[in-house]
Every structure is written in C-alpha cells, then in structure tokens.
Image (tube, rainbow, N blue to C red; front, side, top):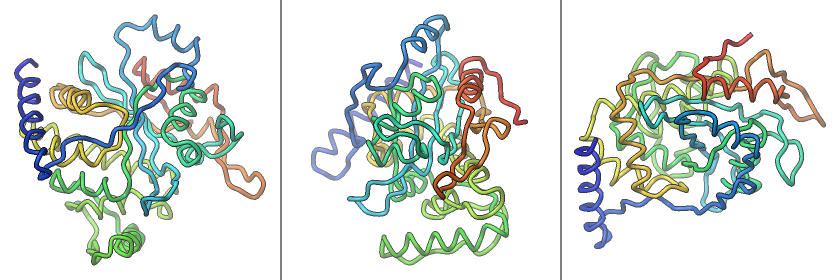
Length: 320
C-alpha cells in the first residue's frame, strides 16, 4: 500500500508540474458542499446507528446528469450509491430508480431525479439521505460528454449489445452528434464488442427496449462494472491516465488525492466481484399516475431497510 500511495503521489505531482504550462490539467472540477449533517440531510438517528458499526463503508453518490449544454439545469439520469469498504476495498453499487416518488426538501413530492435540477448536488445528496436513511457526504458527477471522455481514456468498454437495442442506441448517437457537431459512429452489429465513449453513453441511455428504466439501470451498472474491471486489470499503470485524463472530467466534492486514494482502494482490492442492487425493489414499489405524471411510488421504510441491509450488512436483496 505504501508503494502504491508513493506511486500515486509521484504520478500526480509530476503531472501537476506539467499542468502549469496548461498542457495538462489534472484537477477535477471542485464543488464545495455544506457538509453539516443538517445540510446533508443526515438524521441524528442515522449517525447514532452508524457509530455502532465497526469500520462502516464510505458511501459516495454518483450522478450522471442529462445535460446537453453548459447552461442546462439538468435532472440526474443516473443515481447510484457507490459503497467502498475501506479495509478490504470491497465495492457495492446501489442504483436508485430515477422516477422514485420522494419528498424533496422545499419542493414537495416529486421524482428523485429532479432534486439535482432544483438544487444541484447539495439537494440531490440531501434528498437521498433523507429518504433512505444514509450518510452520504461526497459525490461525483459527470455529463454526457465527460462520461464519454472517461470511457475513451480507458480504451473503451466491452458491452454485449442486443439486436433490439441497436436502433435506439444509434438514435442517441445521432442526437449527441448534433450537439457535439461531430459525425456519429453507429454500432452496426449485435453481440459483445468494444464501445467507444459516445457509444457507451448512448447505450446507458437506452430506456424504450426491454424492461424500461429497470433494465436501463442494469446497463448503467454493467458499464460501470466493466470500467472498474479495466482499471483493476491495469493496476498501477492506470494511475497516469486516471490523473491526467479522468480526473479533469469529474465534478466532485472530493479533492484529487482523496479521489486517488479511493482509486487505490479499488485497484488494490482482492475482491474481483462488485455487488450490485437496484432500489426500490419490485415488491416495495408500484407505478402510479399522479396529476397525469407517471411516478414510481415507493415504500420508503421498507426500501431504506433493504438499502441499509445491502450496504452495511452485506445482505443482497431478493426482489419479490
């Protein structure tokens, strides 16, 4: 671990020196949060409960915003909680359905993905913590374009594309091409293949094929798992690319060294399998139209218990 940390420090320090001439930027887009429990929506009973847990995992919110242009106030297309065991490096991914009907402080009941558009990461984190009894203090956010750059920095990602997904995937590629003013490179055949950054982003946006948004969260997790896998297989060789090409494309409340330490825990982990889950579970939610808008109504008490069991107790939920 000491050798790895030293390697990280040398890599980042060297790149930061080179960045002074503006040839390389190694810093993420830093956003300061009010990290008081009240501002983050961390309830006193949640803090008290976590004190009884030995070495609780670090929970980080991961958002991907549906943002086409710089001035857009966008909803969060992806909402995940990444939980990292600081002792073993074990990783868990918890997807939260973006249509979940929850209370957003100051805005009433709405889809959880609207919290980011209403109040940025501060309100988005607060909304997750308040509704699901969590203790998230930091976040990472990407938009379509930065996510594509991250995938490309890691050499693309291997994805098994289904035949029925091709038309929708290519439609999204055409849409991105209009905004970026670059030709779209379509995916022409189904099967396991290496997708570029733009193709991978388009793949994670597919919603109207298969089981709607439920299956879309599976696509999002599969891409993220594949990216983590590429980083792990690259080992220490991944750090220069992480520092020079990935960090600048992240918006986060964490500093560069904190992020690199997080990456070190991931790469040093002996666990090859990332545990995944999606919340709310089928038996704890139901689609419902309210004022002619479709929402995923949720048993918040049961969902909070299921998330807590998964993250802190290692009990993988079984959908009923």
